[in-house]
Every structure is written in structure tokens, then in C-alpha cells.
Image 1 (tube, one colour):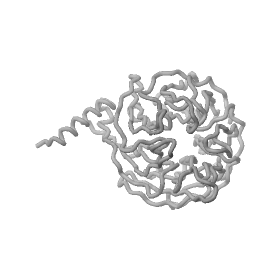
Image 2: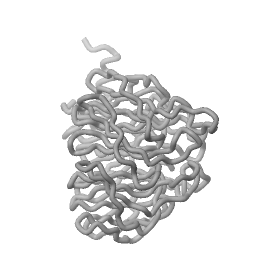
Image 3: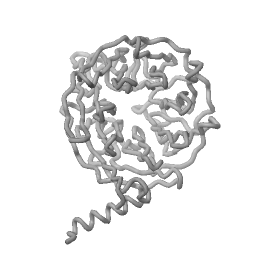
Image 4: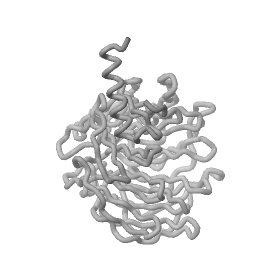
Length: 388
């Protein structure tokens, strides 16, 4: 006997199956559900998928980042989330990094955490720590050559980490950024100086390409450049089609890079025009072209590439303060955007991770971009690989 609830669920499953892939991989994507609650304030928390399938959520602030210099908590909380049983386990606090730090999964399975905005007076920090998942401990390591936040730290093919851009010792909403680039060697636990980048970048993207080079684009402007992995130099590229800050990007199966939305101003907290455009970086021709307009303007969204070469764009915030709760799917082959689902909580500057169990985990971020209301809830979407 089929109940009304079951009947509606089947209809929902079939419609999502048709939406996402024609059932060749994704059967359907379930509605978002709350699967966990962070025990600390989630403002500034970063999510990193570990090799054991769990997620390190690092650098949760126990108070608002915009605190006075009189009293503040110098340590940031961390937790480990298991997508299999939706369990959260407390991890040690981190003491030498700040909010808006960057995490990088190293080749040995440990996690490098770098920089950030210190919780005291918002000063950028040059501290770094390494998380060992086997022992659930953080180890302080060598300091970066310069303090920075809102930078990128890209793991290269040889295991070293390329660190580019960010805010240097300024307030959170200033537009100053570094041209200083550095390279972290996990074996010697040391940083070395690289040639300067051609442009300053903050809240930009740095994407590892198939040949080992890194595409660096945006961050207060439309400029782009390549880090030549073999020569250790930065090579200017033609500009993007529009200036972008706090945009997102994914690498497609054809090795091209999709670059999505963002703000045309210098910083997410400054006034500036938003863009709803999607553009594509041609890996072979080394140039950009505009290909689509999004459903709406959004900043601080995240993007995930699905196994069927479609892209989920999750959350973000438009021109007003309230963040978005919608999730849209972009079909690259058909150049079509469809509304997919709504999250339980509107959010921007969050993390979204496709786990080994075909479950998408969404966590952290803020509900109101200017009030910086942190979000405790962890949400999940489940991919079904069976035909419906």
C-alpha cells in the first residue's frame, strides 16, 4: 500500500532525478536536513574534508569578530564532524591563527592552517598550525613570512603549499593586499619567499590546474595570472570579463574553470556592485569568456562540481543584508540554471563539502552579512546513486 506521503516523496525523487542527471549518476538529491549543531559560535569556521572521511571544522569564534581591544578570546574552537553518523567531537582549540584563516589538506593527511584575523583588534596574524587527525591535536609550526587573512593556500603537485594575497595588518574591511607570495614545505616545516605576484589579491581564487600550474584571479579587480609550477614565477593573463571579489570557482572535467558571481568592489564589507555573471577560463587558450547570468547576484556563495559535470551554487548574499537560502544547479552542457532546493538556514561565507559517502555537508557562515549573525546548524543533502 502506497501512502500519500510515500507517493509525494516518489514524485519529488523522480523530478530531482530528471533535474540533475537523467538518472545516469544522481538519482535524486534529498531536501536539506539539520544533522548537527556546533557547540561554539560558528563565525569564521572552516571545513576541511579529511582522508578518513570526517570533516575538521576549525577556527570557530566564541565571540563576534568585531570586538573591542579591551577583552577578547585569543583561542578559537574546533570540532570534528562525522558524516556517517552525524556526530560532532570536540577538538583542541587553536591559538596562533585567526578568523578568516585558510586550511589546506596536505598529502600526508594532516591539515595546514594559516593566518587569519586575530580576535583582538582584528590584527592579521602570521601564525600557522598543523592538525594531526590520527592524534586529534594541533601543532604550532613556523610562522609565515608576513601576517595575512583572506588569502589562498593551494597544495601543489609536489606537496608544497603556495600562499598568495590577503590583507596585511589592516582592518577587516580595507582593500590593501599583498603581492608577497610564499611557499610552505611540509617536510622542512619552513616558508620561503617567492617572486611577487603581478597584482594584489584578497578574497580571490587560486585553482590548481591539470598541468600543475595555479590560476589566480580577482580579489578587488578583474586581473588574473598563472603561477608557473616548474619555473616558480607568476605570469600575467588577460583580464576576466568582470571584476570579482568573494567569488567561487570549480574545475570542470574538460579542465576549464567556471568562475561564479562575486562583488565588483574591493571587499565583501564595502559597498560595491555585485555581479550575477558566470565566466569560463579556457585551460588551453588561457583566456576568459562570459557564458551565463545567474538567477540573482550573490557574494560569499560556495560551488560544488557534481559527478555529472553539473555545478551546485549554494547560498551567498545579494545586495541586501539577508543571506540566501536557495541552492541552484548549473548545467554546463546545456548552459541552463535551475532552482534546486532551499537550505534550512540562509547563509554566506560558509563551507560546503561533497563527502565520500555522496553526502553534501553545509556548515558555518553567517545568516546576515552585515550583522554577522553566526549559524550553528550543520545541514546535509544526500546524493542517491540508484535509479529511481
